[in-house]
Length: 190
Image (cartoon, rainbow, N blue to C red):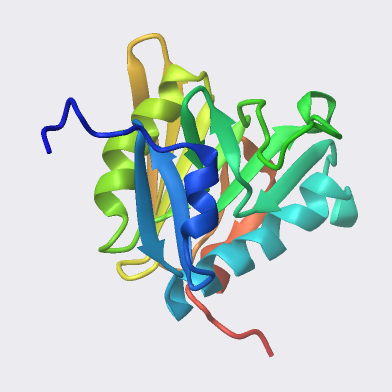
């Protein structure tokens, strides 16, 4: 079968993806990935623990005003993406829609990089996020312990920070509250 004769994936195709996998529709193709590794899940869960209390709930003197979700389905045109975390300013978040995916572009997306997803995350998904006006994206690689922060400019993505190690950081769009990178890598606090 030629590429031109291939049927474009639809949302209904996602129902055939086993529960042990994650399905996305990227550029008309059903892309299936294994569930994330333990290190991947630690980084995304612990990042959520660092930013959700101050940015969603205003705890610890944080600003509040955000809705931040782990692994939401985000429908952007013909694409259905599942970022590791995504955030919307509360006034932009749709409370209800007649379908499962969220159809409003996030204000921030975070992808946790793994060897199996890096090409999709860096190439295809970043292009889709840019085309749909997502203003901020973070790429976190828990294996090499880095956080790359990008801002969308008229010319495309601009990487304005690459942070590593065990420092405490402040980075857009969450630069009001401090984030402890050591926590993302699984450091236990006593």
